[in-house]
Image (cartoon, rainbow, N blue to C red; front, side, top):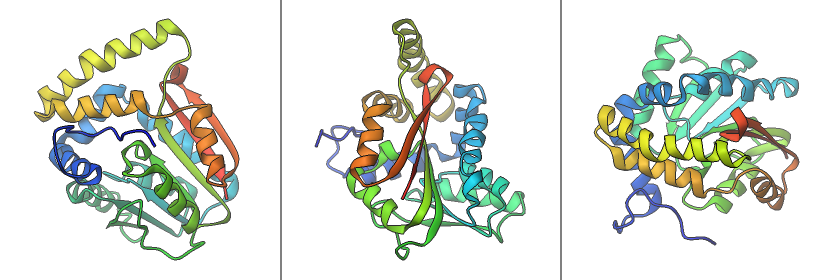
Length: 242
C-alpha cells in the first residue's frame, strides 16, 4: 500500500486524527471556500450524482464524510424516508446540523460522529450510500470500502463524487496552476489555514482516479462500476452496486 498523504507530514498523529483536526479548523469557512474555489459548480455536480441514484428509488441513505451536509441535503430530492450523515469532524457536523435545521429537514436527516472505517450500522442496512470528496481522506481505503460494502443492501447503489485529473496536457497544466498556486492562497486568506488546502490539493493529485479507482471498487466486489468525468475530468462520479 502506498504511503498515505497526510495534512502534516511531520506530525506523529494518525491520518484520521489529522484530518479531523484540519476540518475542525476550517469548518466555519468551508462552505464559502468551496463555492469560491469551484465557482459554485460543485452544487450542480452533487445534483447530478444524486440523480444517478433515482432509478434505484432509495429510501434509507447513508452519506459518508458528510461534512457540512451538502450531499445529505441534496439527497432529499430522492424523497427518502431517512438520511444518515457521518463524519469524524464534530465542528463540520455542527455547521451541517444548523443547515439541516434551517432546511426543516431534521426529521429526515440525522448527522452522527463516526468513522468510515468502523461504521456503526448493521449489515445490509442502506439502500444507497453517497460520498462527496471524502474517500481520499480515509485512513485505510480498503477497510473503508469493505465497510461500505458491508452496510449496503444487496442491489444497493454507491455513488462517489471525487476529484480526478483532466485527460489533456494543457487542461492538466491549467488545473495544476490554479490548484497549486491560487487555491492555497485563497484558503490562507479566508480560513487562515493554507496548509489544509495544500493538503487537499496534494491528496487529490495523488489519489487514484478514473479506471484505476474503478478497478479498486471491483476488487472490493462492487458491480456495474462506472466513471463519469465532469468538467474535462476535474472531478468524477463513480457509480457501483452491491
